[in-house]
Length: 350
View 1 (cartoon, rainbow, N blue to C red):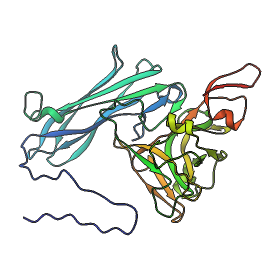
View 2: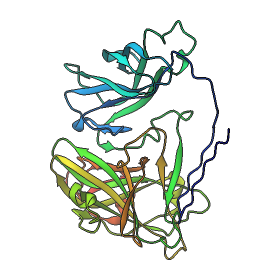
View 3: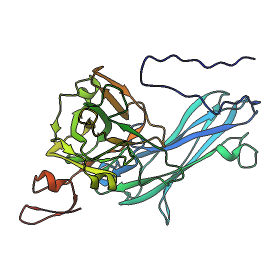
């Protein structure tokens, strides 16, 4: 038997195939590829502001029947818990899952106590008549991950929320594409469910040796229509060029302000445009690859191609919601916001 993998590329991207094995197919083997909680979309947010939580959420999982036999009574149990209690739970079943098929098994959770600000775990477990806790293939039937409910930080990525053992992070940087150092745009998909005031973005950046102070980042917001039609310069709001400092590199994050803007319910893209000074000072945005995300969750616009490419990850470009600022000092805004003072000025600390 000759098994061959072959691909010929034309530029920057490459794909790698690893962990290949030829195994005897078990008769009864369902695999929980991943579990999720959702408020209607397929995106798995690491942090969600309390103002953007729906009254009804969906709990579920992607279940794969890897066995040679069809599986009956495929049951999924899912819970959301904090460190003290189980707060939300569902139990749902599908009567049949055919061999080789993949199904999303899910159910609505309603009439629950609203989740307060804090960290939570989602636990999902799946079983069938042929593959359950008494069988030998049950080690891949469960899934657990963390997420956070926040005051005003909205992030696709879970860097700082997920445990280090499960976290998988790479970098999307201004030096990632030869000849496209300046003007590279990274876009994150966000659903706004309640009218929200936004005043800027937070980006987590790499402090690896190839990245240095002096690089510049421009933050902006796109409507769904503009982002979906390649009109990346038709911007709802845009900030100034913000220079990356040594302090930003040490903290691995940077605050990227723009004028306070009201976003009505809908889909938006939170974006950063990267500039390296013609290659003199590169900047890299951390990219969370821990979870399976839909292809549109993080996207990349390459200026030379004038084309948006899907990435299917969770770049650390975070939306700051419902923070009303009383000053616009660009230097001050690159520090952490402590509070707004009564006289309309701002108080900041590094």
